[in-house]
Length: 111
Image 1 (cartoon, rainbow, N blue to C red):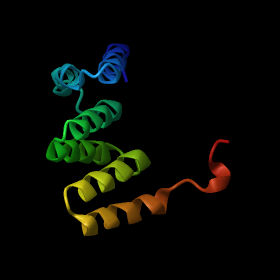
Image 2 (cartoon, one colour):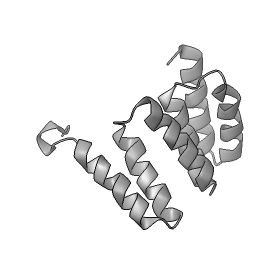
Image 3 (cartoon, rainbow, N blue to C red):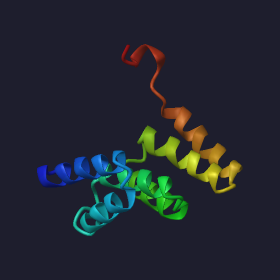
Image 4 (spheres, rainbow, N blue to C red):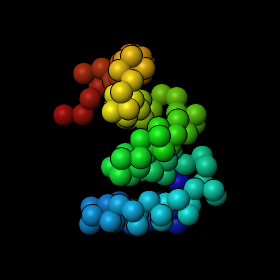
């Protein structure tokens, strides 16, 4: 991730912590068209959309992440959770099943 984009993502995360999720979302959406392949940007967009109750947009952002990194454990877990919130438990279970296939082994987890 280039430095400017990384700084903007950090600023957006600070806005979220300050309770200004809508401002954070607008800041990140301004970067979206020029940063389609940046996984961190889309993960943060998904988180903010989910926090704002915009589940379809959260799901779309997670699908962007998974298009670039189909083995993103965080994106898979988040997608399963969003699908549960949307009332699709069977689809969520399938996503969770895929996440379990790539979950790190306990012996590889940091202590």
